[in-house]
Length: 322
Image 1 (cartoon, helix red, strand yellow):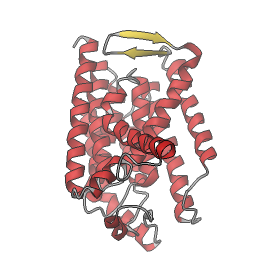
Image 2: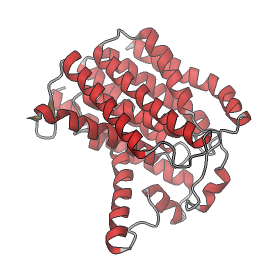
Image 3: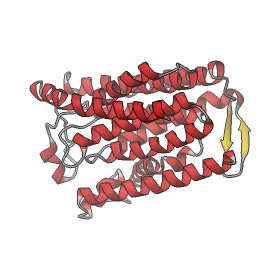
Image 4: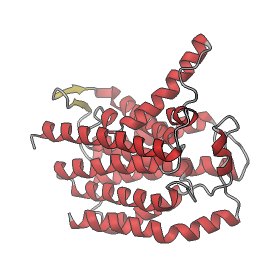
């Protein structure tokens, strides 16, 4: 327990103390957020806000983790997946900001790298951590042996989670706060599972998210960018794989599922009927156009994320007989 608290506190303090200098560095080089033209009107004043804050998040995670870790394969696998996804996000951010390509990396490049990350996570989980290639339906305590199809499921978990966190990152502090809540649930899950090294990593991730929120909360002075959203998505996906909660993640990360589904529903509806279900997707923009204040949306989404995390954690405890 002491290492979990120490790691989380260290990550929080590193984030708080390094962020001001990093924000100044980004401002001098004009690494500012680009705002989509069709976005909510109020977002245009955020143009130019420093982005790529995910760099600080993962420096804050890496320092205490690499010092305190026992280098168990479960925690190494999660850390590796998170860093790999963060590097993919960094390349995307760099392409947008420096090379002035508004869409960032090509879709096929992102797809290829995501597949490679998923295969790496699968190999570590099954061949090094010796986890079975099964899905555990904890609601009914039933296991499904996927055999050779397990890598496909891991890809869906990684791609879905990174996309969900990325889509949620549209309001000040929304993604960081929701990710901190989900990761806090995973601190409890890994602690109950007896994997204290993985719990320490999850604690570092929570601390870094909270430290980042000091500057990312409304009104934000820095955004996490794809570096942060993809990295945190990769970390959550890795935790789901290593704790056999791939299915339970749908509930634990319910807010990310809702955000992603709102985009899918909007696209399908418009392509088939030429009508929109929401005023704008992802769904947090819908509430903005309904004249909800940004802070109201953020706080209510945090509440929903907390409820989902609490229910998911309770189901996990019951499945473990705790």
